[in-house]
Image 1 (cartoon, rainbow over the protein chains, first blue to last red):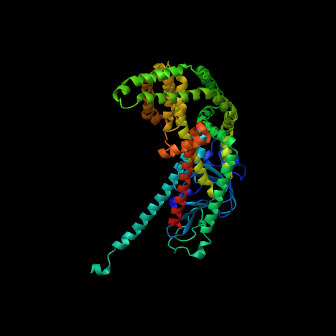
Image 2: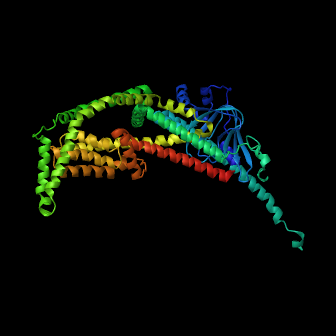
Image 3: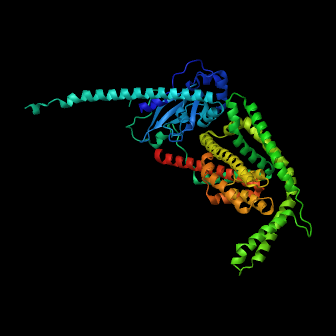
Length: 189
Length: 389
C-alpha cells in the first residue's frame, strides 16, 4: 500500500498560486523546460473540466486515458480494499497532477480520483500526446522525455519504500528470533 | 495501520466491511445502478435522439455526402499536413501547400485522362442500319468464339441464338453507356455543390479539426468524458489507419495497372487504371467492378488487346495486390464480415450511388468501433461493480 502511495503522491510544487493555465503548466514537471510558445501549443490540447465536490473523476479499474492537472481545488486519490474499506492515498492540491502513467498505456486505474471540493482540472490524454508527437515531434519528444524522467523518479521512490519495508521486516525477524531460540527452564533440566 | 503520506486511512484494513450507515461517508461514491424504469426511459430517450438525428441527417442530405467526403479527405490528407507542420510550417501554410499540391495533381490527372474521355464522349450512337466501330468489333469477337470450340463441340446447344442474345445485350449496354455519358457528365456538374463543398469542408477540418474535436468533447458530461474520449480516439485511429492504407494501396495499384495495361496496348490505359484504383477501395466487389469496366470496353474496342491477355493482366495485378501490396500498405484490417461488407455496399450504393459505395465501408467501420468501445466500457463497468462493490 505504501508503494502504491509512492506512485500517486505528487511531487512538491513551487511558486505562487496562479489560476492562469500557462502558469499552472510551468509548475508541472512534465512540461518543464518548455518555452512559452511550446507551452501555448500544449495548452491548446488540454481539456478544461470542472468537478463538483464528491464527483468521481475516474474509478479504480477503469481503463486509463490520461493525466489530470489540478488548476484549482483539491482531489483525493483513494484505493479500495478487498474487504470494502477505503484508504486515502494522496490528496492532490492546486497545480499538482495525477494519473500520468495512463499517458503510456491504457491499463486499469490502480486507484480512484474524487473531487474533495469544487475543482477545475486540466486533462491531458494519450490521444493528445500522440497528436502532439505527430504534429510537433520535437515538442512531443521533450514531453515524453520528461515523462520518462518522472517515471524513473517514481520508481526510485517506490524502491525506497520497499527497501525500508524490507529492512523493517528483517529487523522485526531479528528481534523475534533470539526470543524463540532462547532455551526454556524445562529444556535445561 | 500506519498513516500514509498525503492523509490518514479512513478505516483500518482489519476493520469489518462497511455497513450501510457507513456507506454514506465513502470517499468514492458507489455507482448508482439505474432501476428498470430508468433504463427504459434512457433507452427511449436515446432511441428518440438517434431517430431525430437520422431525420435531421435525411433532411440535410445535401450536406451529408459533402461532409462524409470531407471527413474521408481529412483523414487521408492530415498525415501530409502534419508532416509539413512538423518541419516548422504553420498549420495554415501546411494545409495550403497540401491543397495546392493536391489541386496540381488533380489537374495533371485531368489533362492525362481528357483525351480518352473525349474520344469516348464523341462516340456517336449507331443510326438505323449503321454499325458503330464498337458494334462491329463486338460482332467479330462473338463470331470468333462461336466458330471456335463451343459451336463445334456441343451441337445440341443453339449457340447461334445464345450468342445473338449476348450480342444484343452487350450492344444495348454499350449504347446505354455512350448515350448516357453526356448525361452523367451533366449530372456531375449538377452535383457541383457536393464537389465544391467537400474540399472546402476538408480545408476547414484540416485547419481547425482539433479545436472542433475539443469543442465537441467539452460538451460531454464528466461521467462519460473519458469513455467518449477513448471512443473517439479508437475510432480515429482505426479509420485513419484504414483510409490511409486504402488510399496508398489504391494509388500504388492504379500506377502498377497503368503500366501493365499500357504494356499490353490497352487504349486509355490510365483511365482504366484510375477506375480500377478508385473501385479497389471497395472491398470484395471493387476489383471485380474495376476489371469489369476495362474488360467490357476491350470487348467492344477493335484497338484493345484480347480479353484473355487483359484478364491475365488484371488477375496478375489483383494477386500482387492481395499477396504483397495490401499486407504491406494496409497495416490495419477492419475485420468486417464479407456479408457485412456486401450489405453495406448495397445500402450505400442504393442511397448515394458510387460515392455511397465508396464511403459505406469506412462508416460501417466507425459504427463497429463505436459499438465495440461502448460494449467494452459496459463490460468493464459491470465487472468492476461485481468485484468492487
